[in-house]
Image (cartoon, rainbow over all chains, first blue to last red; front, side, top):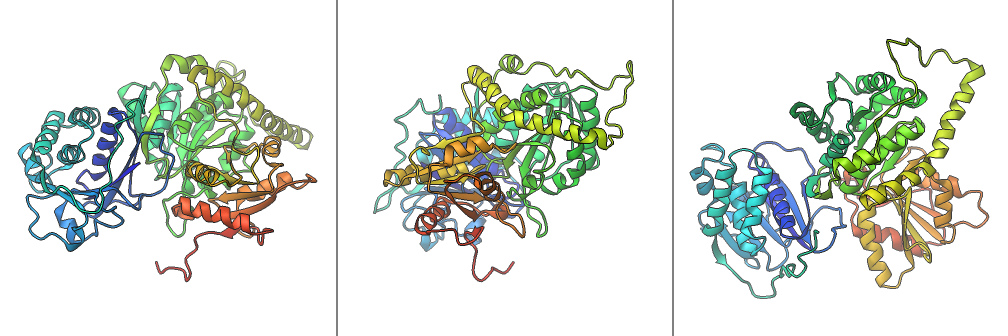
Length: 204
Length: 389
């Protein structure tokens, strides 16, 4: 089983990012489970959402404590929240940022990638100038980083889930897929493998 | 068709498929998503129902009592304080033998203010004459809602479909959404023999003096007692159409089990993993899932557990001054059996605290290494000293 934690701020579409990835992985043949941090959400406050995927029915119904990967939708969270909490060694950290000038020392044992999802969201007029909605761009980038699900599955999920500006959201996901910058594509000491693609009938 | 949907929305889909005619509700977290989607269905025309947005949960149930008395299929959903406010009318709905279906998303009662899962709200309504079914995942919530209408309209009792806040209500997962034609085959239109009708005026639920009241109560209990067998029959038909059945109880690896963990709701799902793990280590452990709580399935329970040495009952609820409520009911069910398992009661996960596999494993090993229960309920995972707010 693979567990993913999404970090964002209320209003950025963090929970929807997790749902989109669940739908995309389901489309690609996996069992999935997605849920928000069970709390009271406020615009601008740090929020979390979670995704589980597996090749068998997911029985565990608890919070996620030791994610395999994390996705950070807002770079200002890096100063406010320990996004590596419980993260398994060798897991991916994908950050919405144009670059990572000051990488926290705690990141050393994780793989690291960035994508400028804010620029892409603004270019496709998603959200407002002050509050761009970056979630669909981040899903495209995350699919690229993991190597799964296929980009077409992400596009399918956006079409099903996002009623507003579906074409612009799809274009943002596609552009972000291509725009990922791999800062640390591997680390020493074992990296968890997805190893999930062997059972494509899982969700039939 | 299989889709990834939220647990709440699985219930809404079921209500649409059941062609409910009147919905009345007052919003309360964590139930709100259920009726939000239903109000969208009513406005986009995909569900031809009257949606009544009322000023309180008490009024929501009052409106459904009126609608159901007039012979239409009715639904509401609520949680916690909302259910508590409905309490008076819950008795009325069952006493009037109205087959109202309600989704009840378990939420802790305040204070302290808490929106997270805890079964004390629904279990506090155990004496109101409502059938109660507890769900483990979103598929079961959808299927149970469909079965609930058929069950309610067969025995003429209201049914509460109970689901955990967040761990079920706000979790997205794959759900097989049945075809309308199959649901129509399973659930015929609601046609009660008696209903309020201006063309044939009649009065229902008039003064019932001592010479008739007791028989009316006994009729209600007869209907309750018939419900487990009716549910089994209904589930047989449900299985032939949809390929799934759940039972009033589900026994997992109980036949040779020395210790049986007893759970309800989403804790059951996590506990399945623990039983797999412990069995792989050679432990003689079983799992009993309690789905039907009212009527209490006395005989079925005995058949499943009497061979075991110990039961470890996990309660995400509490009756103050007593103990966990499932443990209390199970002890009462077994007390006249000459040979019966010891019943260990555990309280865990109140107010939405996570019940992890580690917590469940601790419960198992405590039960195994303790010769005899030392109290009615052991509270698991309490922080010492209590944390500051």
